[in-house]
Length: 352
Image (cartoon, rainbow, N blue to C red; front, side, top):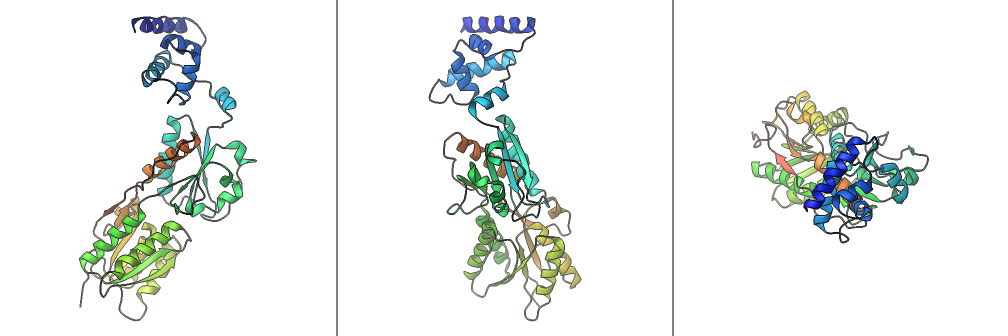
């Protein structure tokens, strides 16, 4: 070990005096290993080939020498671009910005770059931003809400990880999901526990697995409570669209719902406006819930009860899953937990 330390000291001195940057050969000499071992360790291919102690020694030597691999040469040799495409709906909320932040953070730790590609229409087909996506990219991470864009960019011909997608029918080699079913369960049990029995579900008008799950779980939970019922209406995920749909539904003849469950926080904001146009007080006359826990959830009054989704962790898990697929391994299973954050927009129903 003393000999290795002395070798590192001499290498640092040699590099400091010279004008050239340290090479893998310098790292190998400092760590007392072969250049092949250095390539395995710094290329993250060492497991099962060299010991963990050797890998630690190589990494420490590289750090002390200030060694940086020649990525261009390595990528050419491996046939990789070290670039990943993240396909999401149009960036109309900060949720998918958080997904990108998490994915990019993990990618940077592995010398990968992430190109963010929001589908121009939010959902549906999109033009191919590359002359040849398979030649320009190593893999794709895609939200199921923008799945149709994959056909146009030939993303389904690349290693693919799907976000918020049916694991039994996913296009991808792996699927990463938030536990949105449990989130809607928490919403339903919270409102039922407060005494609500007449529900209105303001659903996103997007054909997507994640929204189907929300509708199914809410209907299932409500149906298990005697005397409880739920009516579902669809609206675009815009404040104006939600306002129009909610106002029409709340003004319809018959007993008015006492709880309005929204698929998204933006839908909930539209529902707030609809309730106030009709002279309804929140939460005295109408309890309202959302999903996402966006910044707007605490900007409205009363603050919104909503399901908190960890967007950055979602992006991190998606990127880790893709890196695992690229390495020829199987990503770990398990949905990402979600949490109901109870605020001032829900209360027991006000009965006449």
